[in-house]
Image 1 (cartoon, rainbow over the protein chains, first blue to last red):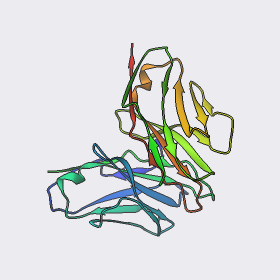
Image 2: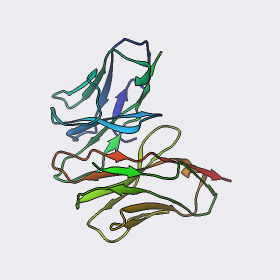
Image 3: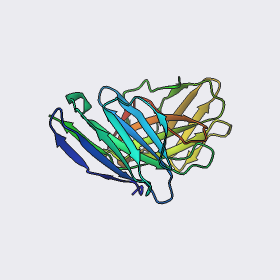
Length: 114
Length: 116
């Protein structure tokens, strides 16, 4: 158990819909990262939050957004869903110590868009 | 931009034998970190081993060791005495030192099969 909790584990929704994925980081970790794992794109970094503020953006679509709340949990919002958004979405967290540190991953949310 | 390449989509090994997974990367940074992550069928991403670029000594974790060749930008993973539980997708990953965190750039992955 990594200590990072993601809900839900599975999600099936229709095209055009909007979903919210939730992540609770490890206790004490200030930084949260979202990654997308799909068959054609592999594992890609989407976005990072640190202590409530957006710190870095990767290949995140404009239809997607995220935020980190005061209690440090994070949500990834996916809207106007398309079939190609079907993927495994991971959240990871790490402690910032002024250097690269190990990121601990949650078990992922499997999103299926039908 | 940093890139990570794993040229072996699939590998297989006999139980108790040794296998080496290859990874190359490209970066202009001098202070960075390299990782191998394991993803079993459960989908969980599990850190196997980590190497700091400033350390010349290759990292070792029990049956797992790396061959880090900084000049060649190569970072291979050796699994000794392979076990059935080692069967998984293995990802090589890179990150560089930055004050805000440690976002990872992943390779395409190598699917490892362990034959009994």
